[in-house]
Length: 307
Image (cartoon, rainbow, N blue to C red; front, side, top):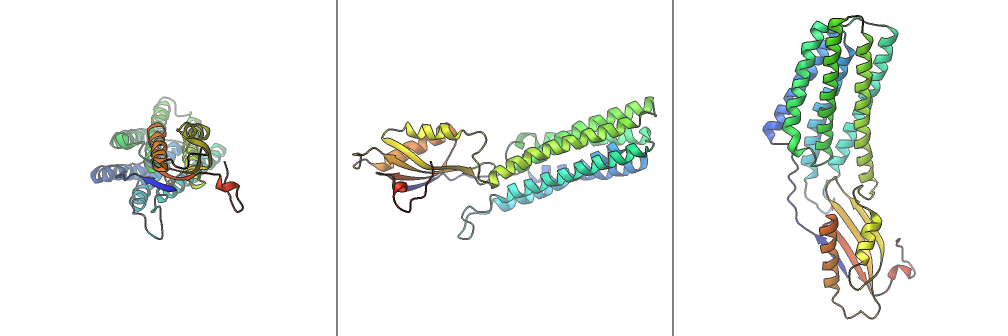
């Protein structure tokens, strides 16, 4: 007997309300233009680096919003899971873009180390303050929804690291006001920003690839789930256990459950209900497909199951 146990959830994983979303995108667009122009005029690579990070913020927010809208499409005959993984695809694209930006900043820093260019802190400093203020406001707008899914997490991480890098740019500006010969500090901060960008992107890439490769979600222990099913009364063995997720929120599980020999008269529905209740309460798994067997069908000819 098989049971497709799927609770109906209303997922409204919006990055924020439309007005907040527009405000965050508008703020970061203004910051990007201001910092890039200011970086070109002042000669500050740190400011240009911050502009590049802000540009990725804008792209992340817009693409992430589109990704969430598409991923909310209901399941159909062509896509039985809907398009839930589209949000993960967008998050992966955003992260790979960040990697490219980080590599460019490091390359540019090396070039400028070889050919030192002067930096004008009088232009650099006020623009850096504008960038920092914009990042802080954007983070406050996204704070409550920061852990909803990979796209919101990616967007919030972009803003968090951008705020940190803006602080670094401000510090460089103050130092150069005191001593204009410390131009190399601008390059050091640029490289630090690049490494923060790379670090944040690698985390998103790792999470995205785990979902695409149908890995067990990181917060779950396969053996613990397996052994917990075995504790359910009348369950003898479990095999063909698979645990995966189709997006950053919903976890799926399927397995074959053998009940004790001689229990053929048991109400298998009650066993299924007991397993499902345990999985939901203990692990938060609400999407399951359970096959109840009186003998291990996978040991028969043509059977193809793993533990």
